Image 1 (cartoon, rainbow, N blue to C red):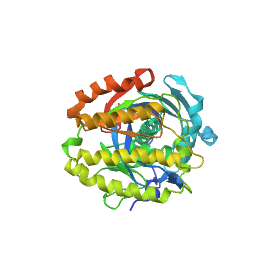
Image 2: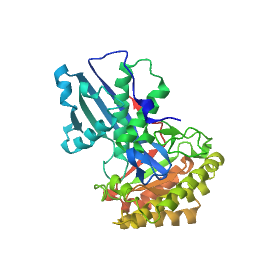
Image 3: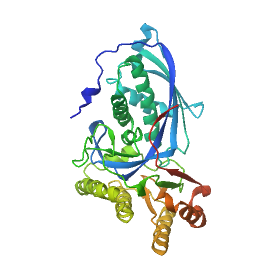
Image 4: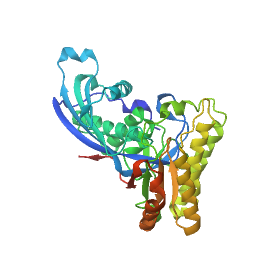
Length: 363
């Protein structure tokens, strides 16, 4: 069984003065939701997600060794977002560096320039912190691999997922794999609270190239941050039942993925989405993160599915935007439905077409 101490390096065999790396890391959409966490970004329940392909963060990390005397001055970095300095992002990055320093003890020895941008709106209910922290973790691991060239690929990706989690819990699911599990689950071999693992069971071809069209109902910043939302699960009246339900639903997905049973898949996924929002509505303080147009879209999807027998469903993150999930073989039909009936509920008619992807990529 892995412990966090396994990721603390003993010594490094090489040195490097300067250089740069660039990685893209995708967002992900949870099917079984993680909501509620313990200390050190440990999830209160396991989750499973589809890794996306087009919604991603692209981050370039340049680094230069500092003068010996300036190492004691602490972390040193510049942050550019979409080409411009972004001061209000810096506290989150600094906190991330503080959390991971014990695992990457070289961090104070370099000055970093972090140049990052998203292919989608940040802070709007698409997991931008997940893709952002995953991309940054991949870059830091690339630097550590230069210092320790003997590092195996398995360790590289596992530790990257572990580090990403310390920046944003769901970021650990954006490192590798099409379908990723995070959190200990007895029927998922190798599953861990410390990092995400690729779903180890058979996945039926029905779920290959699964589509996710994201309807941008509200592109503004989220009403409540994920951190605050997770904290509301402490002393929540339904917390225990919710955590049990997540384990049960993850178990249900194992035979669903194997058999290709999309009808049962839809039941689990939509129930999980509504449960997430039910938890928010029954916490103290309570929040309603859906907008009127979110509900209009959900009802339209249900009506369309009932009338046409098209296997399309929705899921939601902690926001108003709707992820429309469907198999590739009904893509044209569903996109026509979206254009005809759902675009009017989107802010400025905007939506993003995405599908299952493979995880982080070195550029």
